Amino acid sequence: MIDKPKISELTKREREIMEVVYDLGNASAAQVVENLPGRPVNATIRTMLGVLEEKGFLSHEKEKGRYIYYPTIPLKQARKNALDHVVNTFFKGAEASAVIAILKKSEANLSDSDAEMMLDLIKKSRKEGR
Image (cartoon, rainbow, N blue to C red; front, side, top):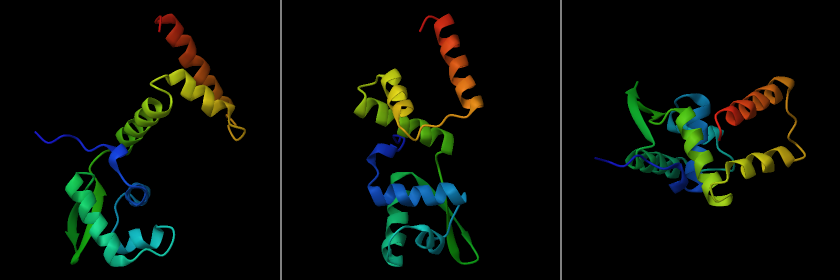
């Protein structure tokens, strides 16, 4: 059985490519190049798309003679994996510390509905004894 790919194993450029593909839903190599920062070389990006496919992050379908790449991991799962990696790496698994750090950021402006949802989650957690 092949291990599931881990977001934490991606290079910075590979993460940028994945962000583009997630944002667009699926993308050709040309679309990825157009949406990446800097001046990426088309051939390099095509090679990296192939590497991401080998690693299990992308797959492709051929459409009108060109490859259209799409993620193999649903966005919701990729977000969870990335967040788990950050919490474990930078907060030693302490989820509350990670949340507090996010809320302390000066840019953390919560909408009323987000604040209410967070309070509801805290209340639920307390009831369940976590």
